[in-house]
Image (cartoon, rainbow over all chains, first blue to last red; front, side, top):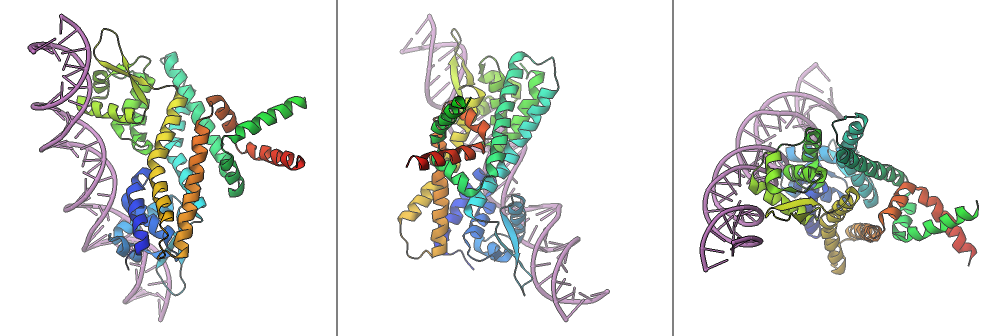
Length: 181
Length: 181
DNA sequence: TATAATTTTCAGAAATTTCTGAAAATTGGT
DNA sequence: ACCAATTTTCAGAAATTTCTGAAAATTATA
């Protein structure tokens, strides 16, 4: 089994982008194969399509599962494991963002938090201020994101479409709350 | 000149996180040094503090400049180039996000766009649908981000603090626009 | 519980990325 | 125009990441 010609482009592209998105080339390509396959695919099929070793596919599947992007789908009368995306493209995007927040923001936020705890008098004011600034920024982003994540895709979509238009609505809100006082 | 002891932690941490944030260890450490230094620093100082070669620092500085995170600061009576962050921690964060959007989203969006243009009848419906879904999602995110980016830090901060609370305000807006019809 | 199918592991190999340091290029002052 | 200070470049070295493939572990079936 080889890659359907119309997907070739995407498999290659996902491979190239892979490392920028947080995984490596093969894992990127594997994600493309799984997402663009109408039917769940098994490890051997992936290995053949991408011409990589079975072991590599096994590790890649583990990686994609740790990102919670794919899940196993058991086919009746077939002992092989088949894989499919956890959900829609939208679900996958949210999942990537969420996982990256965990890997790229959380560790730093922890460090900043603990650093603010220990009132090391050796720190000069400048350093302390920077730490505080970073901490507050990441904390703000963090709560915002977990908040946003809970919204339904529909509301979220509306919100995104509105863009900075929300600014105007915020003004209206201010006026309303002022006049009701 | 060595790293001030209270910064050691951050330099190490920024080094470890570097690759997750889109650059490599040394570049991450260099960013930490520059951001946490009250005064602009020159290449030799950075090289000594981090115990890396002068050439490596030169390349790293180029990288940080390509991200538009640092800028040159000329000291009067000193031929060396000194470096400092382009702005506040907030400015840097926006800049990182903006640069990453460019590197991680833009290429894929281009590909998806051009793929939707060419009406290759070989594509099956499933594939076309997926491409369309991805395209619309990235496009939406893209315009949202460029929109958001233009907001003042203050408005943006308000917006973030509100989080999914905006949802409620959107409801109010809907009611208002309905009643005015 | 034996056995055959399937998946996982992981040591060493291959590929890729990062780093060094000396030479080349650039810059600014005289 | 020359010189000295500074920065950049880049070939090869070093470090790190990724990949292979055979052996070990697991799983399902009879």
